[in-house]
Amino acid sequence: MQADRLLVWVLRGGATLTALVMLLILVFLLFESWPALTGLSLIRFVTDAAWHPLEGAYHLMPMLLATLLASSGALMLAVPLGLASAVFIVFFASPRLAAVYKRLIELLAGIPSVVFGFWGLTTLAPLINEWHPPGASLLAAVLVLTLMVLPMITLTAYTAFVAVPDALLRNAAALGLSRWGMIVGVALPAARNGIIAGIILAAARALGETMAVLMVAGNVVQYPESIFDPVRTLAANIALEMAYAMDDHRAVLFVSGLLLMALVMVLSVLAGLFERHRHA
Amino acid sequence: MRMSLHISADGHLRFYRTFICVIIAGLLVFSVTTAHAAAQRLTLTGSSTVAPLVNEIARRFEAQFPGVRIDVQTGGSSRGINDVRKGVADIGMVSRALKPGEEDLHAHTIALDGIGLIVHARNPVVSLSRRQIVDIFTGRITRWSAVGGDDARITVVNKAEGRSTLELFLEYFQLRNSVIRPHVIIGDNAQGIKTVTGNRNAIGYVSIGAAEYESRRGVPLRLLALGGVAASVDNVRNGNFPLSRPLNLITAGVPQGLARRFITFAQSAQVHDLIEAQYFVPPDAG
Image (cartoon, rainbow over all chains, first blue to last red; front, side, top):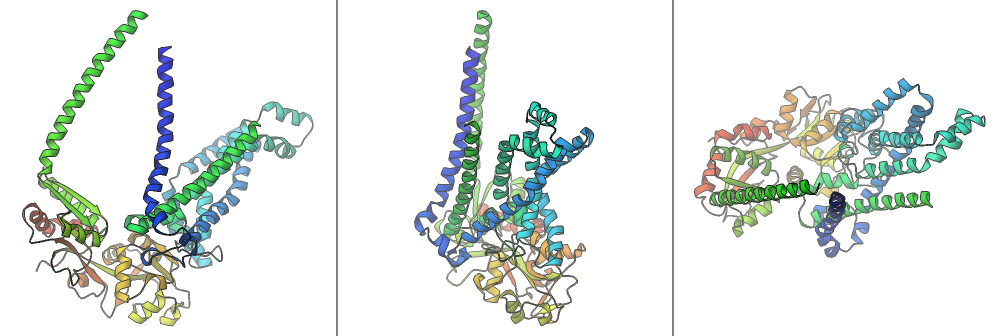
């Protein structure tokens, strides 16, 4: 009994601590961006001519758009590829091949982002440059992000497929459904919630990814006219300028941090809605 | 069962008592050492260009003189000047020569920093005039053929705002950052060098020390001459290269005591390897 009570308190403590860390980060971000939020009128983040913090111009929208474009572009490529890989592992590959393939995907998930960034900077960007200069571009960012979120989507989809009850699949087989019909008609709907949760997680990762994007995206603050134009994401903006920023400039960088956090929060609310949908 | 519980509770108590004693003893030792260190403390604030170098120098200084504690904080050259004037810092770090109106301060140069324009080694252009550089960076010249190179689009590589390299570049060419039309914006020197070596048609600018080091290692890049002066560490050292600046430690008066010992140390040959490791140039001994 006593041990139980102790355990409950330890768990409560741990849970509170985790929640507190999250709250503290939010408070810290608000505190640091306060001078910008109160000193500059908020409309300037939308109406200023450009992002030139040293000249007092704080236009954040091109970076917000670039962040969304890079992430959604990566998801558009990674979701079909990831789903296909997961279907392959669970339904098509021989057990031996499936094991090797899954291990490979796990390895891909373990590669540090800075390695992807380095590869993008020295190999991918020059390749794109041959095709359409300058190489460092929205396209390069999308491709690098795709590689980074692909294993996440594959592995979560794999787990969701594996969790589909065997009875459902056997029934489908007994009804004479083709393998393809069984996957599309039974397995996919049954695994839907797990797959969507994985995609949302991957989206959060793509939104916040910093180093790899910083190295390949070109970092010019502008609305891209094509996928070959360089762009700067919010996270890259913070990493590029924080070490050297002072006063208002610094505070505005924290505002871009807040914006990023708001984006991730929207995603997590979305994830919560799906969760509720499942239980309803 | 009941018995064993009691024993373990007792054991816990004893454990806690020892634990508290250890903490108190630790706190005592800690307070004594900090009190001792407080007497030998030096605070430096200022330029983020100079700070990494000073950090290295400070670590070596602390190793040689145990009991000295050196605190290095960044915040820009202007913070260095303000803090020294207000007496908040003992020494300020400033990545430029002192301006008129700052004659009340004493500057001690510890290193020189030169900025060179770099292109890919396979780019046939070897030299650009001041006018051409301005036109390239502001987007009035967009093809290499206009300055005697291949018929290819120029990729302009600029630095992120707040970097001192950018500041010096803009000041030298009398530009504002908002008129520059970059295709790639980079953070540090290494990223700039990787970008230019990965793109035959790129032009950028980095610390000369870093570029010379990389090109000696066989990395395909070339430093462009500026105003007829070759961009080399030697020309930065002897003051011939125009796009360069001193990295200074500044003090409010003639430095005394620990501050003086530190500045002398930072100007001595003992730290030349640290200066070169940061791609800066040690000033002439004379």
